Image: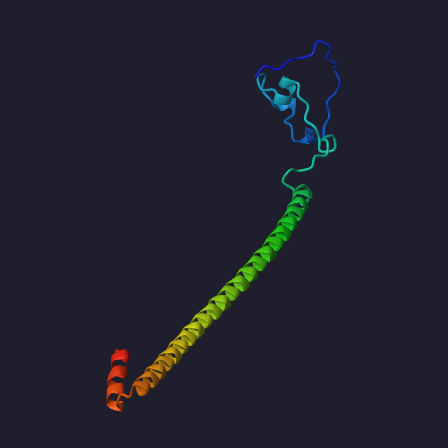
Length: 160
């Protein structure tokens, strides 16, 4: 790796809290020099480092997620309200449909009763007309002077 060195470099003594960890230069061979000396990079102590918030810390995650959760909860609440409104609308539609079906059944039942009553009335009217016709035939036969046996024959022919 190529390290750029500034042209105006100050010579000042380097001291850090990690100097105790470093190997003294007297103990090193001629070719062995510490990496920090050869590269010119100074180690920063913990006190000199800027305070950084860890991205994986719980507080930062909770703080970052809380607005999202609040936004989602507002959206969820709005969605729940819309679903509740839709459910009420559907319940209303179902009850309306059931009422319409009930009215249709009642209407059909009333029409069926009306038809059966008309049939009964028609039958009674026909029976009345047949009885009146028989009475007229018997009266006409009686005026002509036919015997009751002959009158029965004529009535049997009429009934068919």
